[in-house]
Amino acid sequence: MGKIKGFVIGAVAGVLALTACGENEGVSAPEESVQLSSSSIEVVSNSSSSEVLAESSAEAQPESSSEELPGSSSNSSSSSEEVNISSSSEQPPLSSSCEPFSSSSIEKVYPQYNKILGADISQAQELEAKGVKFFDVDGREKDLFVILRDHGFNYIRLKTFVDPKAEFGYASDGCDQGFGEFPQNVEAFGDKEHVVAYAKRAKALGFKLLLDFHYSDNWADPGKQIIPERWRNIRDSKVMADSVYAYTKDVLQALKEAGALPEMVQVGNEITNGMLREVPSSNTDCWGNKPSQADGAVNGGMGSSQGIANTAKYLAAGARAVKEISNNIKVVFHIESPHKTNTVEWWMKSIIMNSKVVPDVMAFSAYTAYEHGNPDSWKKLMIDLGKTYNNLEFMIAEYNGASKSDYYAYDGSRAKTHQIMDEIPRGIGAFIWEPERSGAWGTAMFDWVGNNLKANAKAFDEYKVLFR
Image (cartoon, rainbow, N blue to C red; front, side, top):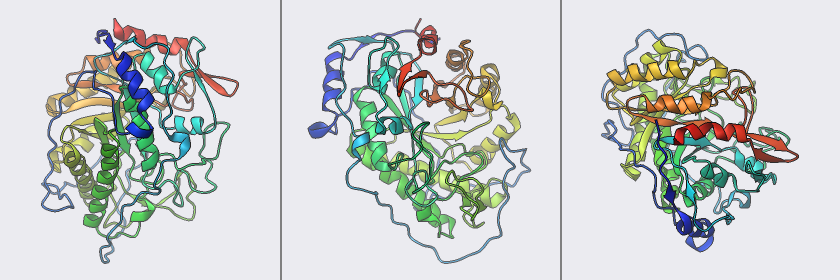
């Protein structure tokens, strides 16, 4: 059980918050919270392609966690192509740039949980761009980061896309993926510049950071992992791995130069079925639905031995880039549907045991509303996995706690998700997904009051049990 540890960040946090932009952009907050040890990642690299140690086996795989495991396409060969990794603009857009934070006190003690109490707030940028303001439970207007910090949250998770403005991208022209009453994405949220700007804000207030690479221009999840436009003509898995490596390192280098390096990096998002598997088709919408299978030579679909080998190669390339930036950054592999024990065990055996590409942390999406089980079942899974993979740490990368679409009973399920992580050997914590949003995954921790969002006292009070 996590114990409360009051810590004073006072004047230091105030100065950092006020100087996080402008002349002192590279300054980041001192690391007050507990340090999590990092084991080295087992990848073998004789070249920039990061070849895996052993050929992946083509075992019969269990039923996929969300859709049927995709099979491989017919192989075709062509010459390799080099891929240039470049940023989309010189300066981050103003709406996501850091602005001075107001402070109600020069010196204040905040609760601190001894594991990760995290939140993915990637899409909050869309709200801010449209002028939505945030209010704490007492009705006082505050920056979203400040509200989370004041209620004991200590980690921020941010997603990143390769080029969200590209055709079929998250923010492509005419693609209405915006938030609620604001359907149109007016900016390329999730690109390198926006991620750097938001990461600096998080660091200025003392948060630690998990960066989530989707390796796509759009949402990557169990049903789709569309190859980004700039890599779509590649026909050689070595060149694709080189591209993953170069892109990963480029984004992390930008964060390093901004003084906002993450403590953890996800190499891929919900990749149970593999990564870099598909390309857009004539039926693909702006969400990336209904894609076509990519060329078998580069397809990372886990439905074939070649696809398993490709995904392992891409994971190794991304992991190598992370460790070259800093060996202290933990590499995270992220899959979903922890209720499908056989699928989880098959995936980890295919990638970690057979391909010998080993992360520091194994993470899961765990949504009760998606029938992923419940905290007790997740606890059993991770305890059992820990007996086989005795050097891995375990984490829940996404949860909400709701039992069905946009409904939460305030029954303690969210806090219990963290409490069970306390009871798992090498369990390090969990991230609630988009606490400012409601949807099929569950209910927000904020309520709409006119065009603004106010923190729900019941939602935040539930976590107080972690600080006793």
